[in-house]
Image (cartoon, rainbow, N blue to C red; front, side, top):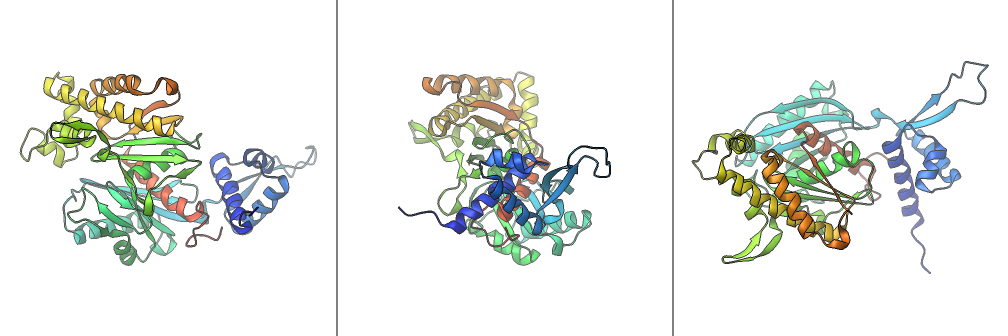
Length: 398
């Protein structure tokens, strides 16, 4: 029987130990062994190597100077915050948000630029992103030479492995090699990732899925995104493709295929003509906030649109739960601002559509995360690339 590649197994075990320290540190070697089911000898060897590489630090519990204290002080292990520094960014149609974080994901600086960038020439967008990254790095008291990686999170269908943006509402063009463009400008390795994947990792690392190894996240923003986490790893399609949940087919109608975006997309909910009652609010990125105010004023047209959107999303969630049976489904994004008409119809549709055998399996969690948190998720993607992929060869020596 063919055995596994020993080098790969060592890398996987090393990453498993490092991730356990990230999630549960400060933590003892004994507890690491219990959580990873690796032998204490293996854990000791791996942690010794991580200490030598400067990726983790020891913390002594107890007073080593107190001779009256019984036994040796307990040694706890935690990530070394200075092991790496990364920049994460959320790129939205009407704003840019940047954060600099350390190896633990702690935020060192953040800035928000309320600038409308959608449909601008690529060169203009690249200029603005470059300026934002450089300013945020300077605010953290660093230079780009101190930064190990940059990750830009934006809506659309993105090929993670190549950095190509197949389509995005931010860009006029398709198949844009934005990662290469920004890597050249910044002279720093730059990753492009879907904003849905970024916020998925943010919740896994810092938020409402920190206790889970498997979960699903649905992003209800300008586009409808999907993030699937399995065994602590992001699931991506062929070539590292992200998922455009808006393309999910709900059925057939008189005019052909009915997709989720045609029922629950922001433009469908708001009825976004070039000149309408939401035109100015949409340009400022406040379309859903304005809609929320109208719903509270009992605008029947908008309430009806919110109910239809909620029903469509509820059915889509039931389909996803049928496929993956995740313990938790987290919903984020601007559409949550539609309030009870949207949320009630979503819950009711989900309850009706989920198979009886899977009722109660998945917990629905609604989260109104800030833009800073989304950008922190992009930073988490950069850290994820640096030290969580066994096949990564560009980051710190793991």
